[in-house]
Length: 390
Image (cartoon, rainbow, N blue to C red):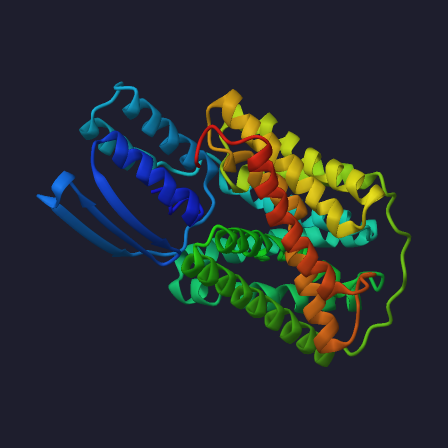
């Protein structure tokens, strides 16, 4: 259940060891994104049980993660029996999404528009990005009903977004930054967070799980970029090269508004529980504010280290005050900081030789940011150890 809701392997294995110790058992666990292996035995190996399961990589569901963690707490305090806890796990598993399709669609549009805002582009790009984010959600809903669409969802939405952006530039708005709008519209699929978690697992010496997660994230990024590249090629073939008209950039203060909109949309997408909403919103502002403050005294990459350190300390404090997994608020802050979009921009620079945003030394920046994120979280766990393992 915890794997299904997006828990990293190193946290999940440690958590399961705590549970088995509480139950008076001995155990060994091997967790990777696509498989779970459990070996459980009693003292002296009189009884031994081995279970292996093929699973799909988990998706973030912070509401169900919090409920599952609360269930473990109730079991450890003797408020529930094992049989009751098992039944409640099934209830959590079958619980419907608390948000309707309209709210989720709006969240997709909001996240796309907010990312365009964070990139400091124009209001035109923000509006078109939000509309294309809604179009992307239509395909997400379609993929839930069609196995064929679900298998090719990522490159398909990138192709459709890129071709639609080209048609918008041709028929309606030549001031649209096509490649930036495409990136903004598919930002919910960009695996920057998965890359960061994979590197964190590698840093914790969970080598198989970390390597698998990093490679899965890179393959997803390649699929998205190829889809966007193909969609733009189709658009240029259909409409020809479109002369770009430079619009007025949006004010810099709108970045703070973008953080509020982005974090609000993530609360819906990640199904965060109502009692954790304020904590989650604050994590985004802490991450962004701390990284800006750090960048004033260091360079941008080390500013991200300061932001990750602040998020790590804040999330560990959250576990002590709210008695909930740190990952619930840490994910919000990390998504504000993760450089998945920079890797995408770097791919575009390498393949097409064009930069659609101002970005010097993009490859070096991305590498340093990833390392800064992992180091910031490690230092934060030393400075203020978490109360909970999750």
